[in-house]
Amino acid sequence: MVSVLVVTTVGTYFWADSKLNRDVDLSKVIERPEKGEGTNYLIVGSDSREGMTAEDKKKLHTGSADGKRTDSVMILHTGDNAPTLISLPRDSNVEIPSFVGSESGKNYPGTGRQVKLNAAYAEDGPELLVRTVEFNTGLRIDHYVEIGFGGFASIVDAVGGVEMDIPQDIKDTKSGADFKKGKQTLNGEEALAFVRTRYALAGSDLDRTKNQQKFLSALANQVATPGTILNPFKLYPTMGAGLDSLIVDEDMGLFDLADMFWSMKGVNGGDGTSMNMPIAGSTGGNLLWDKAKVKQLVTELNNDEKVTVKGD
Image (cartoon, rainbow, N blue to C red; front, side):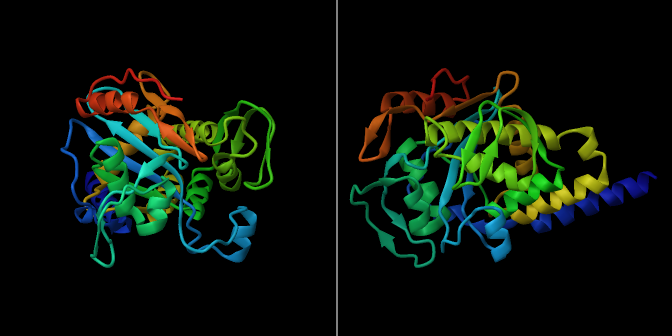
């Protein structure tokens, strides 16, 4: 029995490791900040429809736009203190710095161009998004994790749905959300509609990011139960759906992924912190970060201190 357990464990590790899509090369990111204490994960939800059929797109209300954009961007900090999850609204006003093209290798000098955060990803993919986040925050990103629409729904379905306490009635024809207030279990289609809901919320993008944080924490709590971990009929489909769906950086290992996952589980429980990037106003529809608060937040994260800054 011991031999079977060892062989199964080792085999599972190599099977899982082989399924990771390590497609992001952070060595292409230039002029990077110094590494601080702890680990910073950039977690990105993209609107990728790769592998989805026309029926899937219709069912999940994703539309059929070409290319990929960021639907959500978060920084998860882990270390000796409780984890901190910070949402960077996709409408954040940021400067595109100098960068090296991820495919062309061409140098693009910075011109001071101000854009919405999600434009960085649309322009040159994950590497430029990381470069832009680092340049505008001063925080070094250690690992990158991305998941598309179809993969997100698959993970939720594989785990058997996620229980959420929805704080208000929500109806959004664009995302497909149609929920009554109260506790309910969301399947993959419903979960995707919930985290994408924007126009039905008073605070628009800021309220949406809070819902995304709550859902990801609930998903982590749902997976990290004996009923999932000790049940191979749930564990392997969940791992398979999750690992197949993720795009990560070349240095990301399973233990890094496990650290991220367990930290996510503790974000909305105990001493964990979840917040939006502090906002000071807006310009032309773009959200302006509060520079003084962002500087203090980054200092606390770099020193792996308990975060005292409050976000919106």
